[in-house]
Image (cartoon, rainbow, N blue to C red):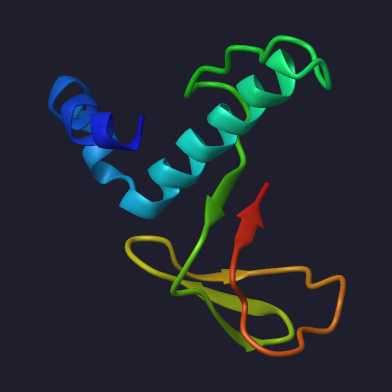
Length: 97
């Protein structure tokens, strides 16, 4: 499905605004949901539109500036954050809710 992302970007211009690795992580989550369904570990995945309450993942290039600020790539920039645990080492994936 990752190979279809460029085709989807041609069909839906709003997808071009997204950081490409965010789209890839969403496709990975969808794939994992269907694998869990077919293995009997979960129910059928629910359809979610882009208009509802969303969460998103940044799988790379995220920097912790201070205990209350995180810098994201692209348009998002610096965001205030609640860090619930001390960060040891590098941030690999950050989920915004």
